[in-house]
Length: 483
Image (tube, rainbow, N blue to C red; front, top):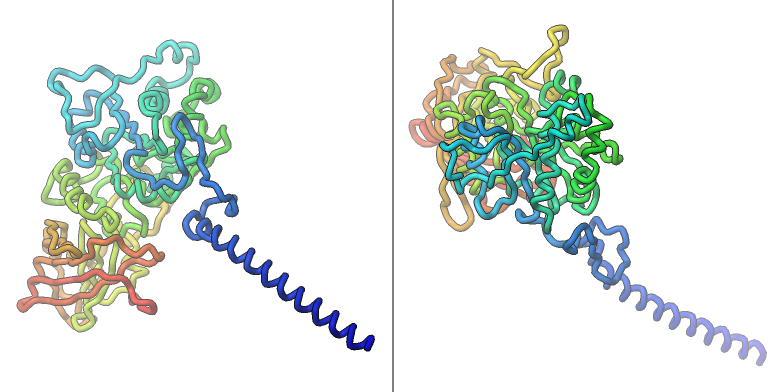
């Protein structure tokens, strides 16, 4: 009987343990289900099990970290001169959106009569602060350098409500605002963040710093960082009065607060001379955010001047910035042709099957801004030399027009702008592309899949007479090779 009683007690204990375990499991599942959304929707949250909405007070307004960044959260501080504005304003007006984009152009003197009334297509102008008294006190600080950096104080003073990002640039900086919004929305604007670009030239980086953002490409500061910099700018001027560059001075000010550069490949200083089509035709896999030094390079479209070229690029940018100059490569196996597409800018046809690892390397159509004659190293990226080899030299086509085909597709058209004037590549079947005069490209109206891969494309048709080639962009298949 004692054994029976012991067995009964054991059974009851097991059942109670099972019931208690089941109840505990249900409670845990319920709690986790309530909190799972934090893992799925809020990847930057540090306290995943906080049950109340998390707001960060960054300044006068309370900004929820989880609100999507939009164009109203960006403020541009552009710095230039009244004299240069006469011929540079067209660059800024090509991308500026009146009554939408926030910011100012800071000029050194009152606009001349021929600039008044001030164009509504331009950013509102402001006269840079007179900081003569400060300069007399500090002595050695260069007035031009001080003026450029002091613009951070001035733009912050003018615009500080509901701001997440300040973007400083020059009066010849071309920005791609939609891409900036998309890229900056991936960063935590409540942190201290300093985003910029290296120079394309090794020597420029060595003369200044690899830790510095070059200003014409765009210097981007989160609100908390800009607030800190503008508050302490005069002390920074005193500490670093011998600085030999505005960008370098701003970097040292930022570094003094323990903040380092976050470099982005889509920002372009363009410390280059000549024809930059090689760079734009093989752009890295990063959204195009800016172009600088438009006055110092050849027009990016050969049949147009610089002002017209900026407007032409914006025709494509205003439809789909997410694909702008993004490289896509496909092949016509029958003809042994390789197509390298830089959406909204150019297409290259090679009379040979060339791997993507080669085509993604820019042709060296340009020259460096400065170089060391004792070194063969010129750029911070690899380049391909120009060649007279007909199997390695492409036929060049330039973006001509864009139109919406239906609710889901857009067509970009590219035309030949110059004859290659080389014989046909003999080793790949002797199929000449000389007759092709136009290329039509269909692409989706939706943004590309953000899965870490480029898009793929198909050569869907080469028309009779081989005058028109038709290409269609699409997502790559799971196991598809671009080879």
